[in-house]
Length: 117
Image 1 (tube, one colour):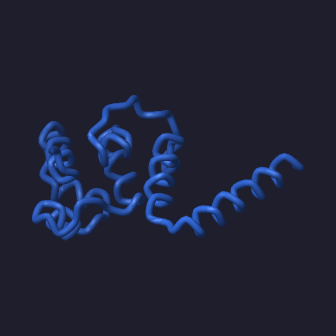
Image 2 (spheres, one colour):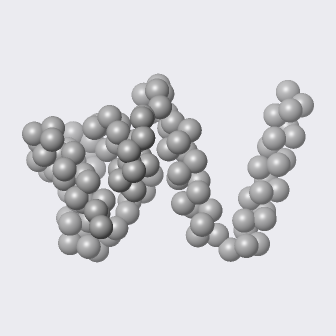
């Protein structure tokens, strides 16, 4: 099974840069990569994953899962819909059923508000 660290390391190798340089370029702590390499972490916050994905021109989905998809075109700093949906799906999976229902109700409320505009 390919780990997040191995995918990032492979992307660094393909670009001819060290993971430490990538961290410096992106303002990400080197401890993030060390924790991934040593198995103390297996994932990372969306903000960091998005920075790394943008840096290498891949999707956050590819970075986190290894599944190749064409990167959606976005303005710098914006999440593509695939990235957003993946992040949301990941966060929702950690919620209790009660909180999932509340989230659904909030989404329906926002949709109703948007339809009024």
